[in-house]
Length: 428
Image (cartoon, rainbow, N blue to C red):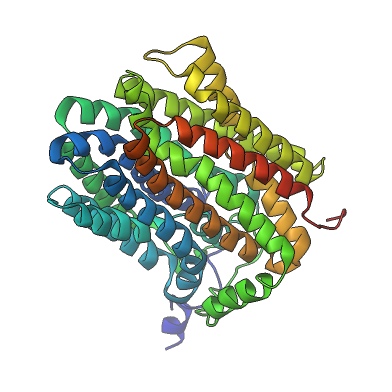
């Protein structure tokens, strides 16, 4: 019996030697693959608008409704995904999410009506991809890493953009060459393959394999399944909802979502098509925006440590307003110097709003700050969903996106003013 006790997998004593290459890095790579895959699905709706409109004569607004539902559920799912991971385990949630994404993509490939696009792409893929966000990245990092947490969290958080950068030009070329269905089916099988990879290699905690977290000096037992996390998430929302700063932050992020991924990921390709630009060229420019977005987020984080986050937000939203106002004048059938300038400036301020808003949430709400930011991010997706639908509907009504760019420019100026009135302590 003594021998059985020593070799029990639940024994608190870890093996003495630790491998030179820690398994935590493999876990991070697998988690990154899941996030990259989910990120790829966010770029597809914009590529489908024109093909579906031409193939089935569906209104652009009907098609964009699926992207709107997807974005809203993506945002609403994220605050609860971490609680579910704490309760049933990271691996189970991630595998289930990828299977939902796979099912949604496969069913989309055989749809025959607009409501099916909403149900399959909007609901199934929205719920699945919503589990594979920054909350997933934070869960993996906190469990497996004692050192290098900032590096790993940053890398995993940027993986979604990496998925967009890697897949978007390929998807655009595939849609243009083979039609819209083969790329959707291909993405479904990519998600299925990654689900199998997660099932084989991802583990919830280092203790599951008798290891210490990377950089830890002592063995860390696996915590018991959490209870009440979802209740706390809701309670924080109720408390924050009684305060002014929450609504100012949420309002800014509604506008942020409407003027970034809401309009760009769903309407950039059809807007470029209106100006005679080839879909592959449009997709390449959108990928280039993603590159500068990642750079802008890093620079913004550095600036947030040194300057008032409110003033940074005012600058970012003002610059975004100016770029959107100028967009109809720089759009053309090809790539021009003016379009490159737009891509650079707009990209740099695209995700730059995130670090200042996180800083303000933490300053105003202390230990509840991360949860408040999670709900603020849900507001971001509500704005994105509304913009995806209303932008496409406006195109159907007015025959162009001109009114869309002007309206978004105006509300960005409103956000720039809102940032100045957030009452946050000067010290962190």
